[in-house]
Each structure stands twice: as C-alpha cells, then as structure tokens.
Amino acid sequence: MPVEKLSLKKQLSYASGMIGWSIITNLIIVMLPYFYLPPSNSGLIPFVPQLLVFGVVNIMSLITASGRLFDAVYDPFIASLSDRCKHRDGRRIPFMKWAILPAILFCGLTFCPIAQTESINNAIWITFTLIFFFMAATTYAIPYNALLPELTENSAEKVKLSSFQQAGFVIGIIISALVNNFADLIQHWFDVTDRDSAIQYTIWGLCCFAGLIMLIPVFTINEKKYSVSNPSHLPLWPAIRKTFRQPNFKYFLISDFSFYMSLSIISSGLLFFVTVLLHLPTSMGGLLMGIMVVVSLLFYPLVNYLSKKLGKKPVILFSFALMSLIFVAIYFLGKFSFSPKLQIYTLILCASFPLASLGILPNAILAEIAEKDAEDTGENREGMFYAVRYLFVKLGQTFGIALFAFLTVYGKDPGNDLGLRLNGLCGFVLCLTAFIFFSRFRERRVG
Image (cartoon, rainbow, N blue to C red):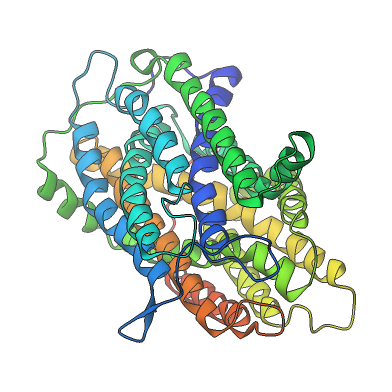
C-alpha cells in the first residue's frame, strides 16, 4: 500500500513516461517494414532485399524475430534484478533512468542503413541495432509498469492510473504515425529533396523528444514516498516458475499475445493499406491515427463505467469480437462500392472502442493478479509478472511484424496486393483465438 496517494499531477507525470516509450517502440513497429521494404509508389529506396530463407521466411521476418529472441531472455532477467533491487532511490526508478539514452540512440540508428542501396549488410546492421534497442526499451518498460500496482491501493485506482497510462500509449502511437507528415514539412521548410533523409531526420527528432518525455516520471515520482514494496528474495528461475503456475495468468498471456500480434499487423500495415489498397496519400496515415486516438479517448469514461458495472471480462470479450470483424473488413478494403475514405474512416471509428478497452483493462487486471499473488505469497514480484506479460506482448508484436513482412512476398504493391489482404484474414484468426482463451479467464471482482 502506498505511503502517500498520487495527486492528479503525479498520475499524469507517471503516464507521460508511457508516451515516450510508446513513441520509440511504435516507430519500430510502424516504420521498419515501410522504410526498408517500401511499396513501389512510396518514393523510398528498398534497403533490404526480398530474399527467402529456406524458401519460406524472408529476411525482414528473421531480423525482427532475432531481436526479440535476445529480448526474450533479457526480459525476466531485468525483472528479477528490479524485483530484488535495494537501491536507496527504489527498485524501479534507477533502472528507468539509465535506460533512456541507449533506447533513443539505438532506435535512431535502426533507421540509418550502412549501405545506401538494397544490401544484405543493412539486414545485418539492423539486426544488431534492434537487439540493443529492445534491451534498452525493456530496461525502462519493465520497472516502469511494475510501479503501477505499487502506486495504487484498489481496483478503481488501478483502472484510473491504467487509463492515464493507456492514454499516453495511444498518444505515442499517433505521434509515431505522423512520421510521413513531419517528413513532408521537413522537405518543404528545409528544402530536403531526398525522402529517405527527411524520414531519418524526423525519426531522430522524435527519438530525442521521446527521451525527454521518458525523463518526466524519473525526476517527478519519488518511489520511496509513494510506494512501499518488499524486495523479492527469489532467484530468477524459481520466480519465473512461480509466476507461470497461475492458470488465470496463462489465459491472460495467450489472449494478450494473440491481440498484440494482430495489433502489430494493423500498425505495420496501415500505411500499406492506405496507399496500396485504397490509393490514398501517405499523409492520411497520421490523420487516421489521430482520429482513432481522439475517438478512443472519448470512450475511456464509458470503459471505466462498464468495467465497474459489468466487470472487465465482458468488455474485453466484446472488444476481441469486434476486432475480429474489423480484420475481415481489411481483406475487402478497396473493393467496397463506397468511397475509399469512407471505408477507412469506418474501420478506424469501429476500432476506437477496442483500442480504448484493450489498452486500459489488461493492465488493471494484471496489477490485480500481481497484487493477489503478493498477498498470497508475501513476495513482491510485480516486475516478474510484468516482465512475463511484456515478453508475450513483445513476442506478439514481433511475430506480427514478421508475419506482415513475410506476407508481403505475396504482394504489397498496387495491382499486386494479395499479401496485404491476407494479413486481414490472419488478424481475424488471431483475435478469435484471443476471444476463445480469454473466455476461460476467471475474473476476480474487487472494489
């Protein structure tokens, strides 16, 4: 239980850290396939060859997967260190502080290919930059998220703080989705003729901005003042085994993995869906993200109300079902009789409620799972719960990007777009899987 409750100002300071983390993470998700494997009508140079390994997996899929494999080992390691930390400033803040600079550095370097043409050397380069980026981002994110249950007392407070946190996450998404819009301005104002250079300048600028935002909770949240936690004494592997023993947690993880894999398909594919399937300008991508974020924010009070009235589980199940229908519609984009703009606006508006509910409620549920475990065992292993959860989230994101990149082999250009449409069907299956597994989750109704 916290020594002192967070004021609204402190809650917003905590949530701001998620804005910065979301920006750099979504720069990778949104821009990596588009920058290195651009569609033919983008004006960009392909920097990675579309080669198939063993005739099945393309290079971009292997690159994203390799970075996450290192991250998969590192996640529980950093969580264990954080859970057992006895630093005078707390268990979480010291890790967050030292992770920011390498996170923004390696995010920017990921978009600086060493060969200015299509080359296997670029594939090797971004493999290593992604590994170091994921490690740095994890060192910030795991301790940051583990603070949430330590800064709140009950379910209502967890949902509220999680709402602010999710608002930060979606704001980060929209900022990262505006890369092409900012690049347009750079080309116009600074007379930059090369589109690739304009995008690189934009990404470096956004990385620096994200780093400054990530510093806010580090300097404004006094961990010792607002939280009380007992360092865990469990070694790494026993802590992991105990975390996995909860059946409820397993259902939560599988549904979370499936959802984030499908969400990465939308994030990675949005610019392709807009420009290739609907033949709209790239600048529409940022506008669409903005509309979706604003509308999703309007749904936040409704999500909070429904979660109190009906429980979190029914709201999440409805959201998974709606997302599955949205993915079916992606397959048919550009083939409906009404205008392309109306098609994409309809999908974006329909996705706003699931974006709100599936952003807010899972974090609140996980905080309750970690809190219940601490009550039962006497061990504060919040970091390990969040590490395992975010391991599955990041694996889902990675496999989502990898799946999207793989399917581009079957068509990613105007008139040859089958690969993009197949992503819609894959997203439908993933959301349906998330629905089935979460239907077995047993919600603990607490005040």
